[in-house]
Image (cartoon, rainbow, N blue to C red; front, side, top):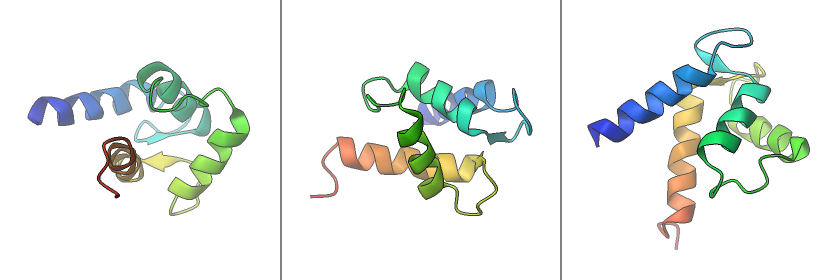
Length: 87
């Protein structure tokens, strides 16, 4: 599990900070991460309307960016949905 956590952290850091803060993901950074790293889980990641809605639901502090904690919670939700835990 340590390798999985390290991968999530390193991928977040690789995409964060290209626009604005290096500790958050902007909408565009988040979309690029989804397209690049989660193509089988987020098939509609190219749809900017879908990304805007998703960002709105994940961005708990409404600052227009995703913190690592907000991103981590999204990964948990995604894993839960795609692996049958919410039945």
